[in-house]
Image (cartoon, rainbow over all chains, first blue to last red):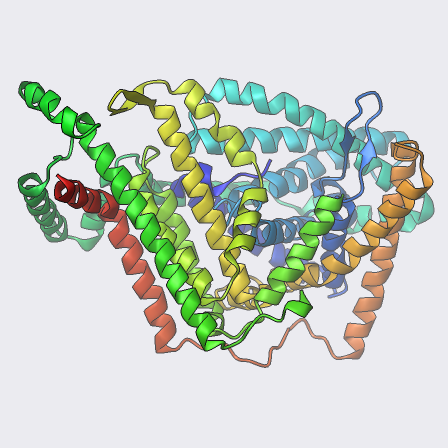
Length: 353
Length: 270
């Protein structure tokens, strides 16, 4: 359920970036305070383990499909919430950069959805409470399944909220919720099963790892209230500031620019340029900006014979111009590439690939 | 599984591409990172029915890819392969938004198709820009840039570790999967009963490995600081890169170049 750049608005993306960046800063401070630097290579290698573990599937009985480990919950169980959050964030960053899963602007959303909820909600409030200090296998099982489900449900709901607030997708809120939550219920159960299977095995083979993790994660000291208040403040501030840019009319940016420049001069000169350009367009263009007025319908039908799509001036212009622009961009790229090959500055060594 | 294996080979190839010495590769990573972020933010700031004004933005990834000597076919393939989530959600737009937005002669196009096309273009632009960034910069350089821009050191070191050990562990996991499938008939051994011990063993080995790495690092004087030979430096060319591109993005944000050009061309044809 990686959120994608193509679906979010700058306001939502920026706000979630702020929230996630704040969390990363907070967790980094905590990890540094709490720890010897032994946990740093541990976090890095366990993050790589999450990648590797995602390659190993297991069949889900009775369905014929297969599932694998997602990450958030098992990281929290092994490393405690702060280190787990950082590790999850790093896994998502690598996914965004190398696999282009999601995107750079959506990275904030993804870190929040897949990191915050399992590490700071499901783990302390459900897993810790269910499992307690001396975890038996039955309690471990229950705790892991419920917390995995809850973490994913919250994450999926957050995806819905972010998508709907961005307004790029047409999916209405209720439909989207009904689409996402059941799918992620199933995914959550599979995730819970995988998590328990691994945790129980580790608990049997090396019980000290699980108990040490349970003790070292001083979840009692996590002031969730402080985290959430800080987050809310950051989110509202950035969201509010950026939503000026996000309004669906293109004027939002112009408005913000005239506001920030402190005077109307920039805006009015823009307008002036705009209107004068528009005048030139109207005078010179065969197809003025938006179709034709009602009185002109006769002329329109006349022109239709000579050009197939006169009643959509903007569209045709847009299509023609768009195609030409695209070709130009391609041509520029091609020329640059040709020049490069002639220069042969640093050829790629094919044998290395 | 074969697909993931191949994906990881692709990462190796991306790393390889990032070790070239073109002028783009030699720019300070911070300049490329900041410019790419400005690019993505500008692209997603357009209204949801915008198509034509988005097209000129292809210039940025195309120029960078060309000057950075990246194979276009490879980039296109990667863009096509990745996360179908945007498409999956986007495809609902044509089903829901059926108001006619464009009349193109006798062809009527619903608003949903327009916004879906817009989503597709955004998707290609944003994903393409991110891929190009990593292929002309390299992961470690991006990490150093992040640290210089104020990202906590713990997180940056974490990213570098993850990147370094990903290859090792993925190879190990793929050997385990191969061994399991050779020993099981059909899906016989692929249930949750073998899954727990399999992944559990991998985890235990991973943790032992972390321990050894830590000891090795301590022996070599690791103090939490990662040092690099080449100091990062912002030269006038980096400043020009950031502001030149940003100015172009803002210009393209306010003026719909294809529409202006299209108007001129259609008039000329007439």
